[in-house]
Amino acid sequence: MTSSSRLTADRVLVTSAALADGTADAFTPDVSLLAEGGVITRIWTGEDPPSVEGATVVDGSGATLVPGLVDSHAHVSLPGGARWVEHGFDPLGELLAVGEENGEMMVRAGIRWARDVGSPRRDRRAAALTLRDRWRGNPERPYLRAAGTWISRRGAMPPGLTVEIEHAADLVAAVRGQLDDGADLVKLYLDGPDADAAPFSVAEVAAAVDVVHARGAKVAAHATAQAGTRLAAAAGVDSLEHGNEIDGDTAALMASKGVTLVSTLAVAESWLTFGRDGAAEMRETMRASVRAADAAGVTIAAGSDAGGGSLRANQLAWEVQSLIEAGVSPRTALAAVTWRGGDLLGIPGAGRLAVGGPAHFSLVHGDPLTDPAALWRVWLTR
Image 1 (cartoon, rainbow, N blue to C red):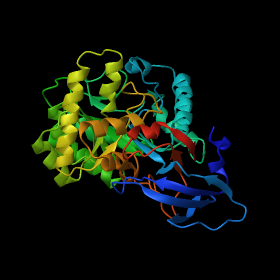
Image 2 (image 1 turned 60 degrees about the vertical axis):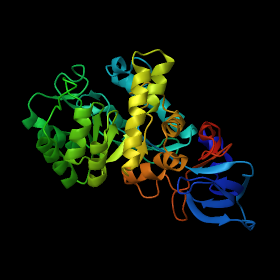
Image 3 (image 1 turned 90 degrees about the vertical axis):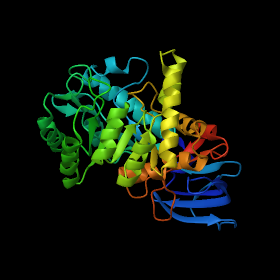
Image 4 (image 1 turned 45 degrees about the vertical axis):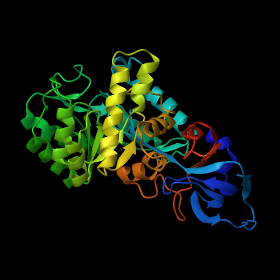
């Protein structure tokens, strides 16, 4: 548990660490940081920090400070693995128990903020909304922004897993229903029953986006096939989730409309570990799509798809590795799981290390800008 870490002291001074935060191409050496009452109160660079009365001192030499990570695409009530769809029908008690396990694993891995982009409903309430409310103010769990459940065209997903829309005219009403239930964001499922055809028109999705924005919330759109990715970009959603098939024209449209790509490349890597058909081909298609988005100047945040894409809740580091292997710069990849994710969540200070900001950070062994596997090697975290 994080309570056993010296970093969780009310006043803690970390000395002589490196710093990698996704804002520069190389780490900054000889950084010291003071946190008091859960807030960063001072950061020193290249000088000996003074002694601080009553502070717990952690010698950070040989380690790297990284901000608390942001998982922009997770399903916290689901366990992941090869049968995640089946687990979407588990009883509520099981969903919530899995959620508690996932929350604990996230914090231990240095993931301090998460965005749940769809969970099963029981008694008309999405499980992730219950977890969000339960975790509020709990330092042993991540801060959570939660969608309700997925909104999909009938036939796109197994019956009973999503809010299913038979007629496109019902889309706006379904969106309002999710917001009325307390969702922080709305999740649209833009892969349809026919992979080659978009499930809604641009005008229909744009109308739903307008309703959500008028309520001060955001729209996350799942799309893997090209028809759905083009629809999401044209309708001006806030984020395109997965985006497995993005061509140059779609990427340019995303950039012009300010649509963030939330990458989930590690899903394909995970599928390869248990021999899922087509995983290798899907990996190459997804890598090409991320490169197209990056080249067009699309903002990239990153998610594990834990619970919904076979990864587990403590494996966000895998996505950083996958982004770099796809050809994205290490700086962009680290930013995707730190401050870029924080910007997408809309939580001040999320994924950043700055004076006056939240004191959520980890000490890892190694430099994640040259060795992304360092993010797996968490020494201490808070």
